[in-house]
Image (cartoon, rainbow over all chains, first blue to last red):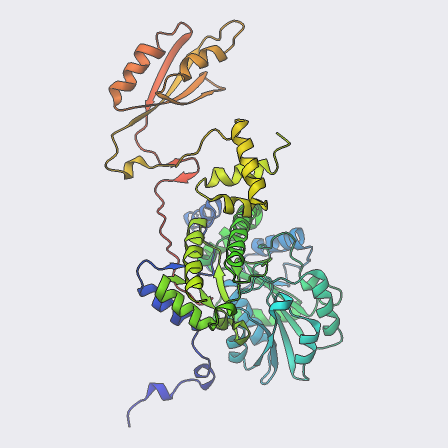
Length: 390
Length: 167
């Protein structure tokens, strides 16, 4: 009998569908002259003083592992930063862990709290990793549909109707990828009211916290009664344009951070050392860089939102991240058809909203982490496409 | 200046990219088309905006005529009652002079001069600048290679090297 690798794989992993975005981009990669609003990472290069600090750490020979939780100085700076920017207090000794990007932090959190069959509530549309990571940790992901008319915020009623005795975790992905929606303090107060008295953890993914426009990000950990149950996940990728450095962190109650550290130490050992030294510099001296990039994104945001509304693709004002999520229902096309036809006829790549959950149907995700020239050209082509398809 | 609406924001937008359409400038500045247009006109008329141009890496344009740039340090004796201004005027009127600043430190004027070749610039220095009554000395530094101008790094390419990833 021959060895049949296909039949000898994990049924949990096999049951997870491949990412829809990936397939789409494989087509884009083959297409010459295609322009894209598809990529979900900053177009800026990491500011030089941060890169230089990483290089300097190598020159000094800092090429070893760090402690499992990350450099003590970095954890101290993370605490200083969260206090300074968001009025959150975490003890660097036992309430934070440095991870390989925000994604690892999400993964080890799921593994640390989920027992088989526990339900994980994932508001959708949202980042593609929550449900697979919940499944791989033995949990049961439950999509909670958010609505365009609520600017894709999670409402208290939507949350209440999704909670069952098996609910273990609520993922709170705001500022949101792909919608650009945010949760204000009063929105969070309503969510907190539902959660008080329950045994539900909150995984608050705040990777885009620095990219809000017109108002300051508020963390649910700030809300009365939410601190102990909330693990915030953040990182350096979006705020400091450090995606390739792969560095994130999680902060929360010592009990859960300690369990997360166990998982982390066996699968990762420690996050990349060079990146950690660079991140110290980012936190100490990077506030101005954030401001510069935020201002630039804000300029582009106004152009792209106006562009979509002017061409008749209704686009609510995204107040966070770097995505616009216009509605394409007026063209009569599904999200997937819109994106595919647009790509083949006008060579513009945008992402179908359905890649982020069924509730993304009727929308497309357009990143404005692109130069204004690129955005302008894409808008012109999309406008021509919309005219031809009405 | 204070009566020009959003003056600072408009100047900042145009300084970064003067290729934007008025519609886009207005959207970014959160103004109506008419308001933005009127404000930009006012900025031009009042001399805040003196012109529009591209940042050019001439080395990348093979068909362009060879061009030589020099930075000249000039030590001078300021003139009674006119200080440095009268002298500066006599110098910056020459079309060869692309920029001119009064400096602190070991020399007085820093001047950027352009010419078709080294001889052009040498002649300009020896026949126009050096003989001026108030000029004490000149030091001419020829530019060998431009790496960065007006915030733009010339070795960077516009290519987007972000790879395909699931997010």
